Every structure is written in C-alpha cells, then in structure tokens.
Length: 467
Image 1 (tube, rainbow, N blue to C red):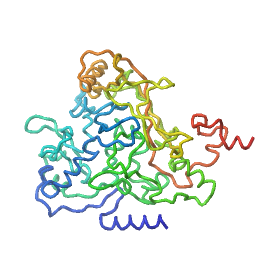
Image 2 (cartoon, one colour):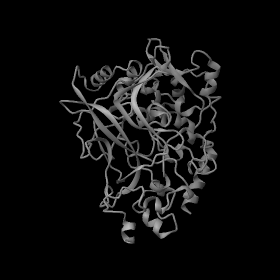
Image 3 (tube, one colour):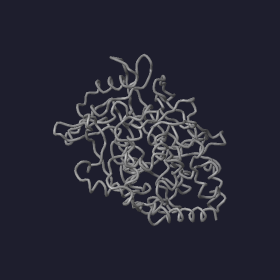
Image 4 (cartoon, helix red, strand yellow):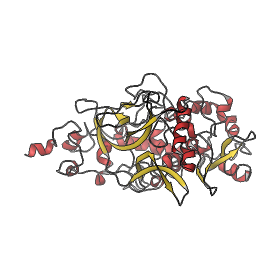
C-alpha cells in the first residue's frame, strides 16, 4: 500500500511537471522574454530562486557536514577538500589546457560547476547571482564552452553565444525540471571520463531498462534523479559516504520512503534487511557498461602519444564487485591542512565509513574502494593537491605539486613525499530487481564475497552452523 501511494504521488507530479525520465518535457518560456542575454534574463523573474540556489551545494561546493565524525563546524565540500582523482578544484579552475596540436585536453573543474566561471563566494552579491548558470540544469540541449568576456577573462557561455542568437533563444526558452541527461552530463562525466569517478552513475542511465536500473529503466519506474533527490529551495537531498557536506542534513534518503522495512515476505530475507543495506544485495556489481577508475597514482606520470597528453597512471575496472563495510551514516574525513596519518595497513584513508557489528545503527553497505597516491608535506604531514590541467599538457610533476601547494597553503619550494591513500565511495545506483539480486550462496559459501573477518565475524556464521 505504501509503495502504491508513493507511485501515485510521482504520477501526479509528472502530470504537472512533465515526464521525469530521459526526455524531461519542456515547460515553455516562449512568451517570457524575447532574447536571452545571459543570467540577467532569468533574474528578471527568478531572483529569489537564484538567491536560494546561491546557498546550495551545487553552487557553493561546500555546506554543513553533520555526517563527518571528526569535523566540528567547518563548511566543507569539494572546493576545500582533497580527493584522489583531480585532487582539488582551486589550482585548476577554468581555462583551456591545450596540447601541441591545439587540441583542448582539459578546461578546469568549473566545467561541472553551475556557474559561468567565477569561483563561488560565501557572501551574496549581484556579481555572484549573475554568475549562476541556470541553463546547465534547466535547458535541454544546452551546451557551453570557454570564451572571453570584455575584460579578457575566461567565462563559460553557450556555444551559440554571439553566433546564433535565434538558436540561443530557442534553447533558453526550452526550460524544464532537470531530466536524467542534464544531471548525467556532470555527474557521470566527473573525474576525467565517462563513469571514471562514481562507478555507479553511467551515461547508460539516460535511457535504459529495468534490468540495468529498476528505478530509472523506462520499462520500470522511469524515475529521474530529482524524483529522489529534489529538496526545497533548489537544495538536493542525500549524502554519500564519501561526501563531506550536505544540502539537507535532516533529510537523508532512505529506501523505506518507498519500500516497507520488511519488504520481502520471507522471514530470513527480512531479518537480513535489519543489518544489511538494500544496496548490498540489489547492486551486485558496478561499472557494468563503462569502466571506472579504481586506482590513480599521481606519482607515476603516463604519456599518451595518440592524445599527446600526460596523466596519472590509472587502473580501470569493469563489472566490479564492491567492497563491504559497516556504516552508520557517519564518516571519518581527512581534512586539508591537518596531519594525515596512515592506518594499520600503511594507507591514509581520506574517507572512511564509521560503523561496526556491535553498533546497532550500522548496516553492511557496498563501496567502491578507490586507491591513489598523493604528495604529502614532509614536515607538516598535510596532503597536497596538484595543478592537474597544466600537468596534462607538459607532464611536469614537480611544477604541478609545487603550484598545488602554493594555491592550497601559500607555500613556496617545499619538500614532500608520496603516500598511499584510499577512499570509500558509497554505491547507491543501478539497483537491480529481485531477479538480479544476490543469492544466498553469493555470500554464504567457501568462495563468498563477504570479508567475514574484516566485518567482525570469526567466520561465515551460516557455514559455522553447518559444521
């Protein structure tokens, strides 16, 4: 009954806002304005909405972090934390990194920021409001590229800007709620390539079937990202295990919003659901179509002669079996500017889930365990980001590290060492129906996938009882 009521609500929403799937029907702005002249055109009617959006994670790239167990008070997000993909946005914000043939290799991390080129500031201003790019989330078919403004500064603008006003107007009037394709163009393309970063958010989700994702499949629930993640005032619901900030701290997503807490009708399975997350059984593998980045070693530059580009040495994986760990919703986070120390395994955890078998609030969740190699200051022990865009062009690793340390900490000519890092990334998407979920023997067998000892058991409890 609960699921039926939720589905009726989604149908009602779709009836007034258009389909929520790949196509996302337009709510036409054809009569709202004559010519699109940038964000100022949107602000004529939507200044309150823009002000609300200014304060969100999608614009600020930082926010409240009650899900971090070892952080108190700071507003954190990707703009002021370190990761083992492109390390940090600040040294590589905007600009065309061009190889010797004139081919653009990278354009900066702001390519996936919902702004037009300025870095987000904490204080609201007219300049910051006009920097918001409404079309990147609300205009189907919108594409942008780097150009220069009247002062010669790099900015993001529609590829039609100054070339085809009629075409630009048509795109700008094609306004809708964000559909799957709009979300995927950043969230699937992050980290340097399709599905490189998350592993469970593939371009395939734009138009797929229920055997790939039972929620987004067009022959399944045909849901869009916003059907689960949309909150109030342009804020987004949900927080992954490796994300530092959240838009809505008290509105975390739960499967039980749509499904009963005991959904299987079988006692043994419903008993499992008390301590095992739904995703654990219903997402047996990730990176099912596109490979995902599993290891990124920045200490070992690699040259790609065909592309005439340098990169870190990257190890890819496909159809990957997740790592499993207890998680109670809290995470231990390695901050920038704080001494980074290795664990018992000799590896620094930049993001590590909190939880244990003894913690009644914990469940076993699936994770993408991403590994990397990053520089660390010899004296202070701080992890150092790299200026990656310039590195892609010239492969000068020393310059990339020194510039990253200068931007992050104001340092000059510092000593550093290379250290191993790891990052637990929650797997939540590409959920399979019951027919594709794990069977008992996938975990409870001699070759089962669960690391029982690491999870706090002496051995598989089922096999133990069978002895």
